[in-house]
Image: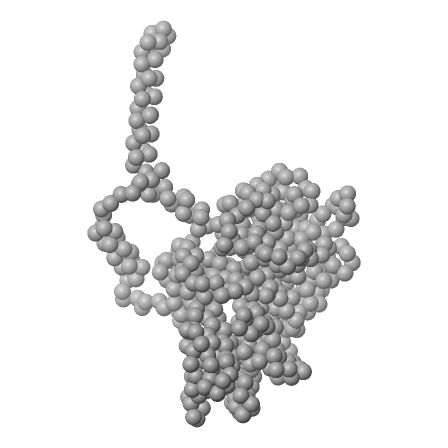
Length: 368
Length: 158
């Protein structure tokens, strides 16, 4: 338990002034603008938007500047900001099959309709530091092909799915309410909608490690990257003033359709099952990790033996949110003076009793 | 997705036409809208039906891409509603938090409902803007297409 304290206002104000000075750094170096962050540190923006669960590149850039580049702090700032805005409504589900693709690859088929499209990837770079980036300068225009990428690009799942080898997407039972973690707490058993929302805003590092552990054997999944695609999707919503859907924006998302072995069950023939990842922005590592963990969390549904943390919804979902995790770990900094005083009292008492017992012990001489 | 390019919106129903110009307007920069408004003589007279409002829209996805719905995360959206002196009501929904931009979209949405204004506004604002959006998309798609690869499987042991 922590207690209210008072005093320290001047020290706090001075600490914040010192923070502002340190944030600025060396004043002889030009100050960075949110627009520069938005344009040139885009993947940092994308992570802040994904885990802040708020798509607004300008706000994410401001948050990153304010947080001195600390991503979890910036994510916290976005989560706090969103509470100041009213909810205008819900979008129609974004149609990822109709994505304007900037990147699309599959590890399951060499030849896929529409092709393997690398897009702006770090893959196949040699991870050698590039000294030329230490200087500013013009860059060459990226080469263009004579013909653009097909739109819409056929999905890999539809290719395997035709043979019945791949489980189909679960059709909706009804058009009832959908779990919304911004309006209700986590509840167990958590349905797929609740799990996917929690994972989409979950910490990339946590999910990456969870997903990694499934590959190392802590839940046998044997995954293949069926399809990864990144690009722009249109956001449509029914405007209450109009009564029909309107297209209000394009947003960038990354989607991962992970394909996993499944030996079948009493009611199902052997087939491939799937895990799904979808995140705001270009976040391929996160989308893949999310898909691995989505699949491992389906263990109970698929009748698999539950042996490892990535299969345990309570373990994963209660711990994947970095705003909550950071808050609870960091609350240890708050004054725990009274708690600690009582603990001190207890430990002193225990020591006194132990010393007394030792002094009266018949084995005292032997011990000495 | 509402079609941005002409012709795809097809049958010419009033709703489809309005969906198309709203999709284009939602992707038009504020400066462009201001410039287009300042060119209108006489300037349209309108009143806000309610103050432009910045808020959140919960963006949804589907499990697996086509399965059951889930809430992916929110985005900032600003909306406005205005009424022209001549009567028509316009609405504007834009991404982000720019209230003036949402209001400008609403003004053009209302103006485009006036039969004597529509043709000139489509020609002066909507069609050029739609063409610009399509050109930017085509340019990007061509650069992306240049990164298409063919993987050749190497025979093991060779």
